[in-house]
Structures are given as C-alpha cells and as structure tokens.
Length: 300
Image (cartoon, rainbow, N blue to C red; front, top):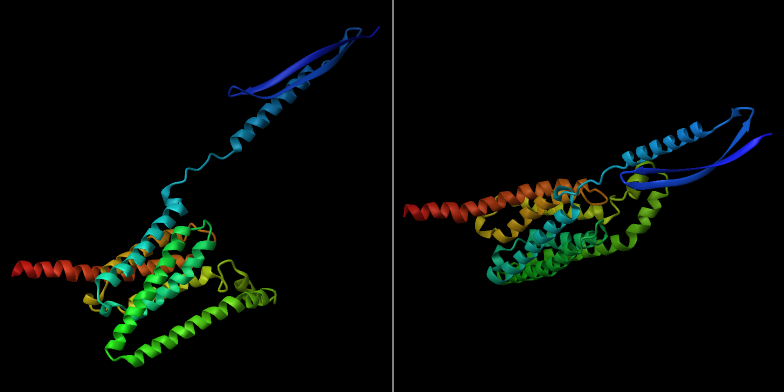
C-alpha cells in the first residue's frame, strides 16, 4: 500500500521588521516501503534564493541625493532674477535722480533687445522662471523711458542727425525681429529636414541658432561688448546702480546657465565676460567717487 500525507508548509521572509512575502505550499510525501521523497530541501533553497534576490534589489536602490544650493537651479535663478530686478530698479532710479547726460545710448539700446529676448527665454526654459520674466518686462519699459530721455536730451543739444540715425537703427532692429519671429520656424524646419549633415543638426539643436536659447545669450554678448567698448568711459557718466546690478547678474547667471534645461554654455561664457567688464566699471566708479575723493578731502 502506498501512503500519502499532505504537509502544508508556510514560509514568510521578514527583512528589517517588514514581511516581504508570504507563501504556502502543500507538499505531498509518498511513503512506499521506507522510500520517501521529500522536497523540503528544494523548497528551503528556493526561499533562500528569493530572500537574497530581494536583499540585492534593496541594496541596488541608490540613496536620494541631497540637493544643495550649489546645484539648485531655483536658487541661482531666483538670485539672477533679483539681480535683474536691480537692473530695472537702477534704470527707474536713474530716471528720477540723475540727468539724461549719463545715459549711454549704446547700452540702453542693447538692454532693450536683451530684456525682450530674456523675457521669452525665462518663460520656456526648464525650470520656468517667471520672476526673471517679470523683471525683464519691467526693464523693457524702464529702458524705453531712458531711451526717450536720452533722445530728448540729444535733440535739445542740437544733435538731431544722431537722433535720426538711432531711430532708423531701431526701426531696422524691430523689423528684423518681426521677420525672424514669423519666418524663422519655416527656415528651421526646411534646414532640419534637408539632410545637410552638420548644418541640419545645428538647425535642429535645442539651443541652436533658431531658438531663443541661442539669441538670448548672444544679446548679452552685446552688453558685454558695450561695456568693453566703453572701458574708458568717464566715471562721472557711469551709473553705480546699473553696473552693480550687471555685475551681480553676471555672477549669478554664470552658475544658473549650467543648471537649466537645455544647458547653455554660451550663456555661461557671456556671463563670465559680463561679470568681468561690469566689475571693472564698478571698481572704477567706486575708486573715483569714494576712495580718491576721500583721499583728497583728507589732504585738504
């Protein structure tokens, strides 16, 4: 006679006080003339293998990386936006406290283009920076007012021809911007699908020449260029508020440009240049107004 006995085997794995799985198996053991086949050893091996697999899986989960301020796009973007607000505030302050003779037409025109492009950039970059966008919109109005004051001052001084040249350049710049806005996407699409090798790759790039990710930092190169052109600008015509804001902007955006998506190396390099040129002007202004003047007063 063959004897059958059913054995219920219940197993559970407990790791760190938590039950990870619970299983029950019914094993049949057959007895025949003292010959018994048991599968306990196989079951034990299977359970141990499962435990080891789950432990390995747990060990493979990487620990959550602590996000520091150095790697926070929100922190550096917020600081950059506050510095941008300082630039807008500087224009408003200069309009109310300083004469129109200190206004640099080159810098004011560049700032108008720069803020227009960066207002758009701040809306589409990841993470989105609405504080930065709002400061650039405010700066557009502030710089437009500064441009108006400077042109009126030039006309009062009899420099009508220079005013006309500036107005014509402004009209040309606006017309070019409108043309790029409407026809740029069509040209980009055509070049991207033309299979022209590196040309098509550049045209389709996330931060390529058909995107604001490219032109926003390029406009900032114009600011740096304007600063370099005016390296010997008389210190009495340098706005300490404006160049303080520009220096801080260059500092904060150097780091911020490496934390956004897409990463913008052009923006990083231009902010290094902006920081250097603006700090140069700021240092000259502080030296002339507070250090040299103080030494002269002490000698008297």
